[in-house]
Image (cartoon, rainbow, N blue to C red; front, top):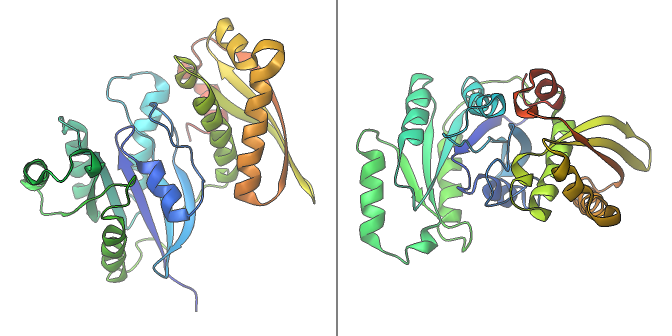
Length: 296
């Protein structure tokens, strides 16, 4: 008998731990983790088995409320689209968060869609068991909503097992909202693009991580190897020089690190060819954003 498959969307502001939770639940590196903004720019889907439940995990973009370019707008709309077909929304909040305008907007949207919501307060290891801080935060979040809430630390794993058992128990009492496969046809390509971009984020500094996009121009799957031919887009000529590096050292390193991560994820050999293209104001280029997969 085929198992029911549940769809869970993980949302939250940038750097709250969404991708870290995804990697933990998948028990391997599948999505980039970083303290830098825009580490995730598009919905990323991963199928996992958790407590014997079959689940599609949706890693949504971490949204910055200050950015207003076309790329940021598409990121903001990504999590809204998932509300139509998900069985549960995990809203992640940083323990140091002082402004809940973003979270309030998410809760209102989810309430209208009648979506099951669970709140995850991450990084509680930073407050060293200060119960007053935890109680105050819980009151601020739940004063207007009766919601299940878990205080966790993905770094120390405190409260993580209880949280997983909790949301699985809630799912078990539900019938999946959608029986359709919600994973897009281009998900594998987008996932590879974002893995490469994640390596760029890890290896570069300053404005480079935020001004870079990766687009796979050609993807050839052979019997023993997968060949990837990709373009790295930047906004300025000096950014191109940094990505390439002295005598090509940086782009070579990006290619090697990307290959190792992809081979670990897919258990198959990869060949990666990278080139760098300068495209001014690419974040507002509708055609390019659509080709990359940032816009449907």
